[in-house]
Image (cartoon, rainbow, N blue to C red; front, side, top):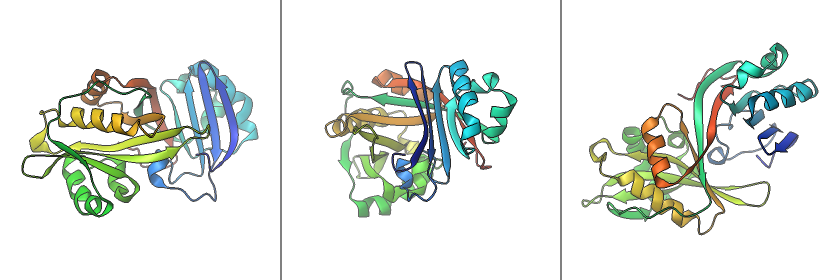
Length: 246
């Protein structure tokens, strides 16, 4: 987002509100957290009444966003005018996870290796079609670096992609997406082992490791909490698009 023009930036202990104009900016989809098709993007996280107050003060002076990620429950605090200014379609909730410290080691369930670009383009699309077909990463395999767990026969049991995302404050972030385990390999701990190992490897060269998951995925939430990731809170996708990111 740092390539866009920042229109509003409010950072307080309990609230963060950022409005960015991305019109005319060439973007790498893998690094944009669902905003690849948006022009003006709003992120608002934290205390609902305070976010509503900030938006009430500033919405009239700024262009209407066509994509937003906002704290769940915000809508009940908004005036009719601010509600009309926001995108029209309120979609699914989205949990944000992060860590800046290494995770506890998880026993390996197979060989964890990094794929070359050629290997990823050859193997990952077909694998994700079975393991995680709704992942955002399935539409942009080339935009990620891919790690996999291979079983004893050399087939992929589980995978996760990593995008390198610079941050506006100079910190570096590794953004994870496309975590998936083949249906026949589920229940063996592959995803836990892969997430822990890849996170710790990526923290050698990045300040943060982050990712998101849909709010309905209680199984994944329990896994990430058990591994030691911090839950940064739940947001809701709000978009002018009819695509609801389900």
